[in-house]
Length: 323
Image (cartoon, rainbow, N blue to C red; front, side):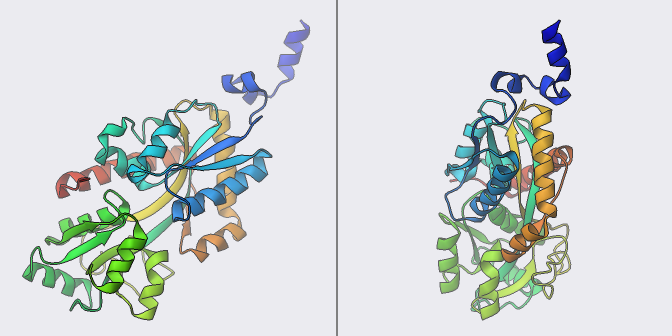
């Protein structure tokens, strides 16, 4: 009887989550946040921003664990297979949860159905640019040049399977041109060759490429998002520039292993949405050329499913693959 009275006084959410009953109120020990890329990149930057806020709100240590490899699938695979107890989370990006599992089938996980969506955090557009030696001052001129010289122009990316690579593949599809993909081991190496003229075209993340646009080191033609970017409002979208049904952005969010208790997911989503709404956080995002992105866990799950369908079609039609 006494035990029954004590249980009745517990918050309903704690009774609903078996994982909580084992360790006490969650979190009772450090939480691991897996970033499936090396330190220093945008995914790592956003992961550490999320970790700082989670640590402050949860009043528990949140450890960022960088596990790079295979386009972000190595670390994500580890996170997906962790216990669904709220103590392992993962930063989600297009390559980790959508394109990577398609292009690297040996990973053995589904980045949508094998995870519990928590929420979104930020989105970043890319800019279609050319080296100044390329005689094209607009997307229309680039398309005409590529059609006149099929197979002779190339575009670089930070590696096969990322949104920057698939932005180029979508351009090939929608514009009907033949340009050659040149994958690099990271964005820095690609940028070096682009600035030197060894790569002629790129669809690079706005924060990385915009400073070089401003100095004239590369020529910007359009942004890859459906709407114009407030960071470069003078640039048309690819759709405005004449490439139909074109929309490619990098986005970032948070997931947990499949089966993570809803009470934990709801709490994490609440922290994430409050963080995205914080003017100080928005200012930090603006500083790196990112837009805040806020969704419920259910909305983020629907978003992931839609992105998988869209990118699967791009990969299928373009024949994109990992060498």
